[in-house]
Amino acid sequence: MEDAEDRERLMSVYVRMRQQSVLSFCDLIEKHPHFNYRLNILQSVMPRLASGDTIERKRVTDLVVYLLGHYDQGLLEFKVDILKELNNVVKTKNHQNMEPNLLDCLVLHTIIVDEDKAKAIAESATRSKDLHERMNKLRRKGKLKEYKEIKLEMLNEVK
Image 1 (cartoon, one colour):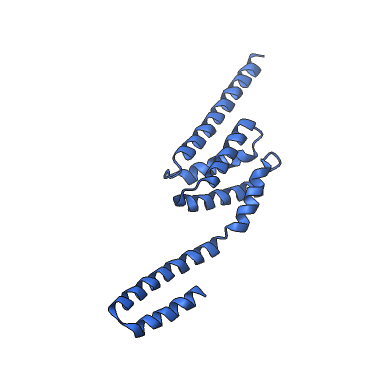
Image 2 (cartoon, rainbow, N blue to C red):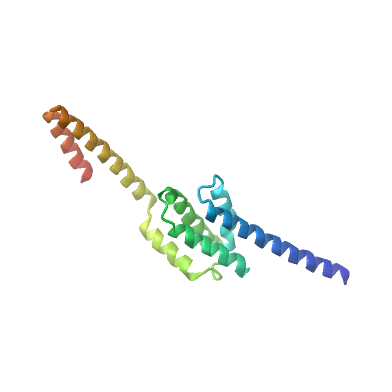
């Protein structure tokens, strides 16, 4: 009898400690999203989205929604990492317990965010900016022939 009570007590302590650690990790990422080990922490809490524990599931869901809705431009890569982890959780875990808005969010962001296209657009924008700066320098110096060549190159880049 006593052995069963001890096991039950230990199990309840374990559950409370697990909940507290998940809540603490979520608080850390939410308050300091630029934290060095944010991806490691994210990978440890994301599987809790499919958890049977409603407290953990709700807190991690709130964290994901908050981070994806955050407007900090420095978090764009982290948002892609969040979506990748969310995708992994959906693929590997039973997602019947997951909040439906997260699944909608994943579908919406999958449509909007395509990594290869985003990188190509960023590279193209950088190249266009460089060409524009070179054109301005040549125009100021009066080198019109080279200016026209770079202008044609820039037009081709924009196309």
